[in-house]
Amino acid sequence: MSMSAEHAEELKNESAVVCCRTEEGTVLTAENLEDPDIFPDMVDSGLLNIPDDCLKVGQVIGAKLLKTIDSLTPLTPAIVEGAKELEGSNEKEEVSKEEVAEEAQVEEPCEYLEDAESYVEDGVLKIRIEEGKGIDIELPL
Image 1: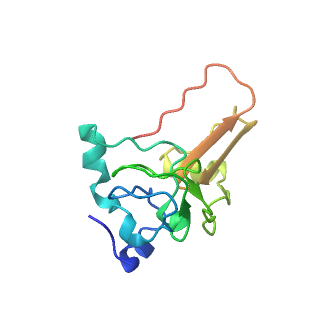
Image 2: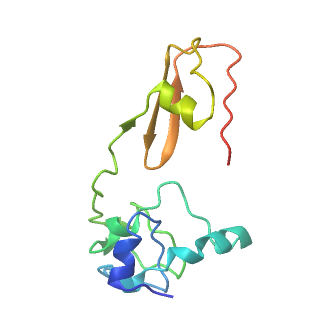
Image 3: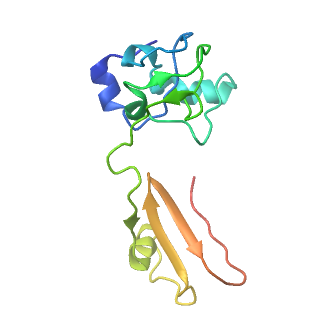
């Protein structure tokens, strides 16, 4: 089921997947895109696989399709020309050790991880540790 322009604006940070067969040279609009609300069920059933490099709805509106694709095809940089960068999509939000400890409900951050760096980017907590032994990181899913 395709989306309206208003609904696409609300979901601009969700994965972009075409709802129907779309011809090469098509300038993509909200009407070409599937509503992301149904993706979890489709992924669970094996009908849809969203790759890591899948573009977002806000990036593909107005972009041109480089080849003809079937319905339920995720849009990637390889098949779309003119994808836009979303505002704030490449910005890193710095997170202090204290904030990570607070979120994890730990009384204080681990002192032995002085060489650790953590930040949130595109809604993903990323932890980088230069060097260490016996490091266990557990994040609830």
